[in-house]
Structures are given as structure tokens and as C-alpha cells.
Image 1 (cartoon, rainbow, N blue to C red):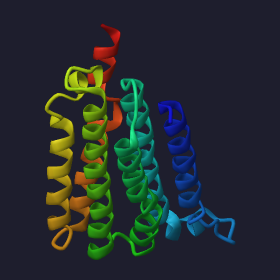
Image 2: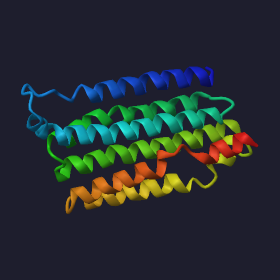
Image 3: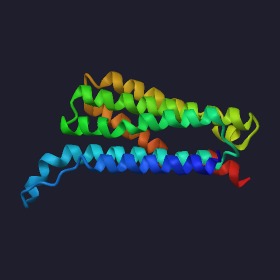
Length: 191
């Protein structure tokens, strides 16, 4: 299988994930602005998740752009990532519909944590497939951003019981860290 086919499949799955998330947003029957107030938590959780899924899509693209080939292990690692991303709509809906209660916020963080771990596994599988001196290996390096994100997710999950909004702030911090596509890959490819 070519990396282009893997990327196209992943793009399709990610597009479906975003579509499923938006289906959880329901327009109020009333025409006043006040009627939108009950939808604010659901919309906020959707917007946060949209950003996360977009970040994964963007960085997944960069990851595959720096890759020369894929193999069976990378296909399974990619499916592993897509599995956790496919749970984002469920966790998003649960968190938003329950106004950011502790357990749904922790569950949301758990899904994000496992997606981050799956992304790390995919990167390692791609490095193994392409070699330790490949552009992808050089670009990923020690993966400080990935390790930092995983640590923040773990801390946020632990904090969710005491302060769910602190956890949400930590999730947003991870989004800020990853919002700009991974420049390590761009630097390696520009050489």
C-alpha cells in the first residue's frame, strides 16, 4: 500500500469524525439569543474537539509527508490512532451535554491521552519502517512535544475530579502546543 492511500483513508475517517461531532449540535426552536445559552457547553466542547481533530489531521499529514514508505505495522498503528480519534465525538458529546462535569471531563482526557499515545506509536512505527536515519526519524527526534502532551493529559485526568475546568484549561494548553504544525518535520524536509 502506498502512503498516499493511507493518507487518503485517514483523511476520510477524520472527515467523518468531524461530521459526527457536528451532529450533536442542535439548533434551538426559539429565535431569541437567550435560546442559545443552553447550547453553549455543547458548542464549546465541539469547538475544542474540532481544534483537536484538526491538529491531528494537520500533524498526521506532516508525519506522512516526511515518510517514504509504510508497512503492515504502520497500517495497524494508523488504525489504532483512528480508533481513539473515532471516540472523540462520544467523549465530546458526553462532556458538553453534562456541562463539563468531572467524570465526562476525565473521560474526554482519557480519549485524548490514548490518541496521543497512539500518535506516538504511529511515529515510532514509521521510524522503524523508514530507518533510524530517515527524515522522519530526524524530525521526530526525542519527541519532547509528544511526551509533554502525554504528561499534561495524565495530570489533567487526575485534576478532573477536583477541578474539571482546570483540566479543560490543560487540554487547551496541549492544543496551543500543537496548534502550529510540527516545524521539526518542515525543517528536515526543507534541507
